[in-house]
Length: 273
Image 1: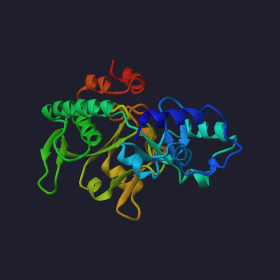
Image 2 (image 1 turned 30 degrees about the horizontal axis):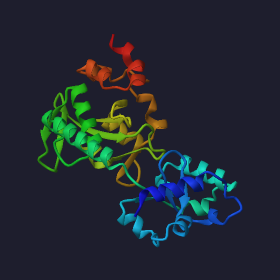
Image 3 (image 1 turned 45 degrees about the horizontal axis):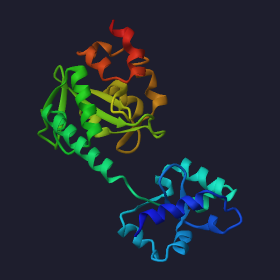
Image 4 (image 1 turned 180 degrees about the vertical axis):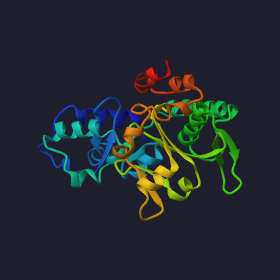
């Protein structure tokens, strides 16, 4: 397939509005080079004789994404401008967008990630098959609180201890917590003396820490089922940025400040001066 012709017709389509056409009903679009450049597949099939099915786009190296996984603002703004109408929610659920990935950038990123993973393995941060944010959060907790990490005899993975007392570490990754709360298994809390929740931001830095006594969790949050959900609204008062109750448990304050996000570090800095 001639990519130059494909890009040319996408460019042509995006240069003028099409509010009087029926293209607004289409569910398959192809993204061109640059910002807000798209065209319906049906239009491209009319203009490019050799393009007969969407399968040809896959064969040519294009990747399809659903609208819900795509940069929604860019496509939605383009759609509403081109067709002079709002993008219906019922239609958006079925929209697929084809785009040509930048393979050089992807290969370069994979190579960089592989090198980074090698460093993290050498530094004993990546130790098992858990995902990176979980293992990094556990390592942050181990470093900040001086935890002793031991191979678990009862299950896969590792157990953590603070002055001989077992610690359960729960790691959550993202700039915002789930409205449902952080999910913790009661059985693991019951087996531990402390529970440390490490809130890791999207940039993989510590955005918050919550240090709780396990018996407190069992008393306050015990109920039906095998899971405890720790909502921010319930445990927020025990966050390090709000409470100094467990500050004395910090063994390495420089690591806490070093690996914290700037906002988090500023909130807790006074406690360690």
